[in-house]
Amino acid sequence: MLSDRGYAVLNTTEDLNLSKEDFQAAMQTANFNRESLTMLRQRRDNPADQIFVFFPDEMRGKSVGVDVVSALTKRMESNGVNNGIMVLQTGLTPTAKGAVEKMSASGRCLLEVFMENELLVNITRHQLVPIHELLSEPSKHALLRRYKLKESQLPRIQRSDPIARYYGLVPGNVVKITRPSETAGRYVTYRLCVS
Image 1 (cartoon, one colour):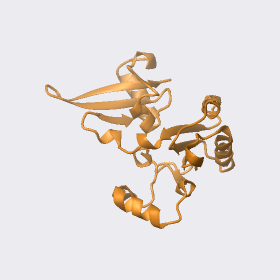
Image 2: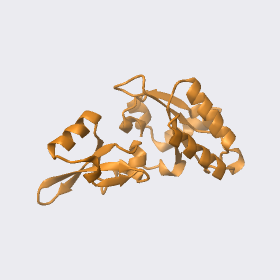
Image 3: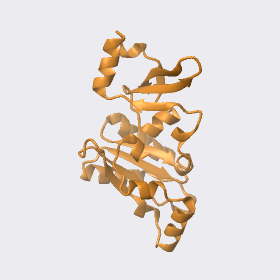
Image 4: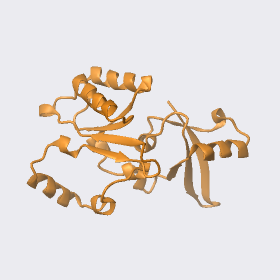
């Protein structure tokens, strides 16, 4: 997912081609705790844009509380990182979920929450999912000028859509969707991300 979002992933070919069995064997032999998987990555085209990926330890199947969210937020702020992803096994408590939403709405930092089972399969590789490409701001403005459109006239994609979540789309982003077509060969459409 980080690679698809444009972040540099160390040992990309080795890590991405690791089989499930090899990964499990490596994790069982090491003194494994989930927090050891935490990583900080930079965007390939802009090293100043960084993202933390957290794997908080969840005690005996309990949901992650607001204290863990606060600690992760402080860690992000102390490192000057505005984007973060939490990968959870059990979920968040209602108070922690409210804290994440409040923090994201304030614009201080954006902390996305994914359940582990959501990330077991790469949804972008499914045969029924068309190719999605995030447009840069200059490309977005060129598209609007070319077709003499306002942003509000574009079809929409919800921020809660699984593909929008996978790519980390925020309101105002435009995504180019290319589908195969029996008559035209390929069909291109654009969608505006809304909350």
